Length: 311
Image (cartoon, rainbow, N blue to C red; front, side, top):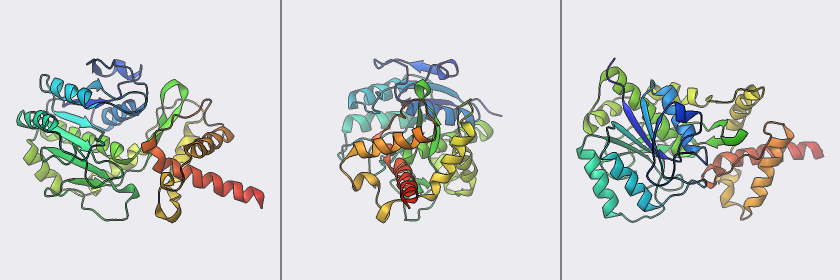
């Protein structure tokens, strides 16, 4: 067993419970999670990364949005602290390279810190994932194309399928983490485990190691994370079963729901009604635009039941 890896998660902060299990650094955004995204990532990494030493830097607000300034400041902070792996389960909306951002990432790379970042869920290229000093991650759960698990020569080196995770979010609400964010958390867990059992690798050597592996090396971790559930009430098993059932429902014409309707309120209503009918939540589940791919499965499941009831 080698030294415990130090993982920095730049995301939406930590829940009250996780503040007892991980460190936090306030760069002007506070430390408390108002969305649940950062807490879900942290739970996955703590549980499946062989208990690394985790530090959270909050940069995402309650809507999972931030500014370039906060992202830059968080990365600048990472240059001054002890860190082995930096988790960036986020992407920029801008398609243009931002030299100042690249400069700080390049400096972190020279320091030997491994940066893992998620590809935008609806793009083939996004920053900072496509920087050569970053390991980019794609979740192929909703892709028809086949990708190798790890391709050193690709802009987005790592690709694998990770099923959506439904979890107990903040204030007794329920939410989902899915897409490339989830895949990024799983890969960070995998790298943390490698560092724990085999010692720390340089960026180039880590990429070589990952390129010799396959989805089989991470599938078990992905399947375990799909059952991640921090709930401690009678609804836990209902949620697990629901989470598994939803994998069987796809999209109409292979298009995500947000491409088929301009009325987000319809989607929100259906989700709330679906959850309320099954008494799975006492309050409305928080909804994030990036999660609509997963929630569209709920929509089709709901509409199918309504059609059956009319017959």
